[in-house]
Length: 282
Image (tube, helix red, strand yellow):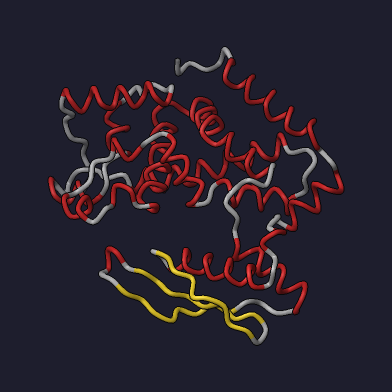
């Protein structure tokens, strides 16, 4: 059965208008924006036949990956495929999406079920990052490729610069694996040693074994988060925390030396995008 949209109250309409103004965009169909902000827990409580944001999240994930890949391909003339892939993986990661979501305060506009609200879902990392993807998917569906691409570039410009300047949140697992393979010719082994708490607030404890030593436990709200923490503990013990540069990106940067010219290129491109006459969203 085809999902349907639901009527939007005057108060909700005003709130969505304020959010659009904050983002600098304008939806032709505001119901699409409302759907992008409607979590399945909310829809399940009011009417299962209504649309939640999961399909838009799927669409947004694919569109974000395409736009960031194209942007990096066109602008990163100093980097080869391996470096571009690593930069992209950071930019489209859950952590980056979460930071973007916090910056635009998307949590204030989400519609959640009572249970999800009580369990702290409004501020949960995975829920916020998924909602950002749904927002991107909705704007692409509403306003087309060109406008949605400019929206994504503006949202993620600062995150790309962070990676370029090595100020982003590091992927400790990848760094530990590359270090371990180069130094010891082995791959780190992760194991969950304990879990605690209810399903909606589970806490994971993970150890990592490198060569003959075990490090940890890393603790996190998800297995992936706990693994990252365990990898960081291992890197700290191996006295690698002062060298937490991405090996692939750093080697490429040092050999090709983009320096200030590279950063200037980013600023110039972003400025042109913001002032383009083709931007019909204003």
